[in-house]
Image 1: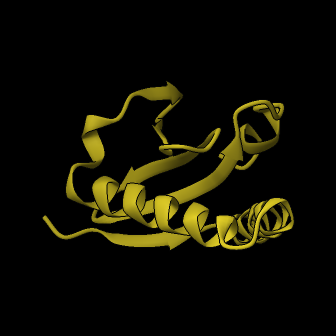
Image 2: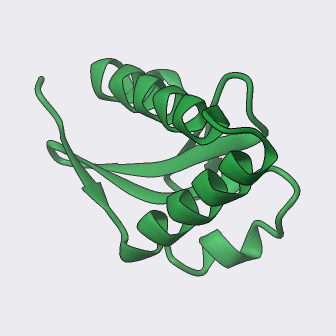
Amino acid sequence: MDYVLVFRPEVREELDEAYIWYENQQVGLGDEFLDCVDEILNRICQMPESYAVVYNDVHRAVIQRFPYAVYYRIVSSRIIVIAVFHGRRDPKIWQRRN
């Protein structure tokens, strides 16, 4: 089945903040972060059911090399990305978006 990725508006802000933070640490690191996010999103689209459900019907896919995870729901043929979230942040923030 082909899935369509849909992003909650907050996801763009989270990605922008993480990108800027990593770029400030080392030039090019923000791009590497976005590449890793893109890679996990591709994997999610290929096999969305393979990642663990961590809250109600929300799945979590951990991003390689970075302490972030993608949280998403599967609704029909859509994958709704709820958050791209740092592992040390309070999960209640993204849980309220569900």
